Image (cartoon, rainbow, N blue to C red; front, top):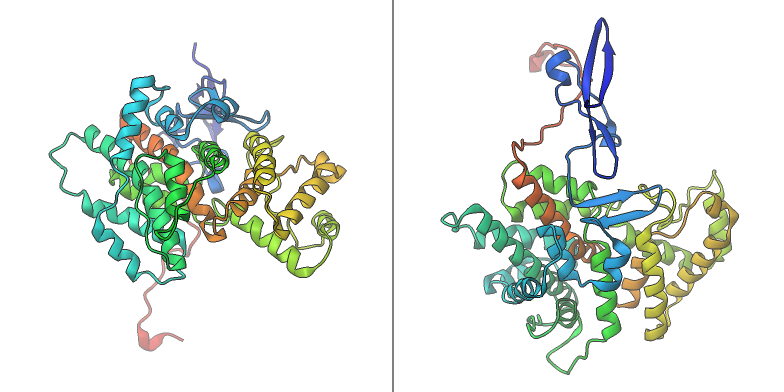
Length: 429
C-alpha cells in the first residue's frame, strides 16, 4: 500500500501521496493541493520544496556524499576524464571505448567558433566582465544555428550539446585574450580538452608554449568536481527556462547568468577578495580568525562551511590534496597563497570551527588553485561555468524527456494593496 500524508484544513482532511526516491529520500506530493483546497504551499527560497524528480545527481549533505548517476565523486575524480564524466551525466551511463572516442572526436570537430563571432569581442569594453561576455556570446549561438528545424528535435539537442561543450572553452579563452590585448589563439584539435583550453589561454604566436601536465590534471579535476550539484540556483534556472521550450543555448545562457552572482558561482572570487583585504590590512591571520568568531564583527570568512554539506564537502577533500600537489610543483611565490594556507591551518585546528564543522569548502580551494594557475580572479566564475556545463545540459535534456512535463509556473501569496481607485493626475498629492 502506498504511503500517504494527511493534511487537515478547517473541516477537511486531505490525503497527499508520499514519493520515495531510490536513496530513500521522501517528499509529500502537493501537486493536487490547490485543486482540492484552494490553498498553495509557501516556501521562501524553495528551501524545502522539490521542483522535480531527477536521476542525475545524489547529495547527502549530512554524510558528505556526492554521486553522479550513482558513481561516487571520489571515484570519478581519481579515474575519469572531464569528457567521460560529461558523457555519464548527459547520457546516463559510462561510455564504452568506442562511444567515448566518438564523443571526444565530435567535440574536437566543433571547437572553432564562427569568424563573425570574433567581431563581437571588438564591441565589448576591455574591462567587460568575462561572465557578461560568456553569456552574450553563448546566447548569440542561437542566431548561428537557427535554421535547423528540419532536423529531429533529439538530433538538434545532441548536436547543440556537442557545440556547447566544444565552443565554451574557446569563447572563454577569447574573452581573456581580449582583456589583456593579446591575439586570439585558435583551438588545437590534436590536444586534449583541458590541454587545449590552457593553450588557448596562455600561449601566444610569438613563442612555443608547453602546457604543464600537472595543470592539465588539475583543471580536469576541477571541471569534474563542478560538473553537477543537483538543484542549485543555476541548474534550477536552466530547467525553468527549458520548461518554456526555449532552445538549449537560451537555457544555458540563463544558467550562466544565474551562476554569476556572488551567492553562487562568484563565491571563489570572494575568497580572493577576502585574502586581498587581509593582505592590505597588514593584520595577522589570527586577528581575522578571531573576528570571524566574534558575533559583533561584520567580518565573514569566505570559503568556509557549506549550505548543503553539514559535515564536510567531499569535493574540498579531493581539492585540498590536489592544491598541495600543485603548489609544490609550481613553486609559486605569492603572499595571497601564503595567507590562504595559514588561514586554512588556523581554521582546521581551531575548536570553534571544528565544533561547528566550518571546514574549507570547494570555493576556498578552487580559488587558491585558480590563482596559482594564473587564471584572472574575474574569470573564476567562468571556470565554474565550464565545469557545470554538462550538468546544465543533462538537466535540460532530462526535463525535455520527462513524460507530461509542464512549464514551470510558481505561485505566490499577494501582499500588496487591496482594490484601489485610480486617482486623476490633478488630484494627486
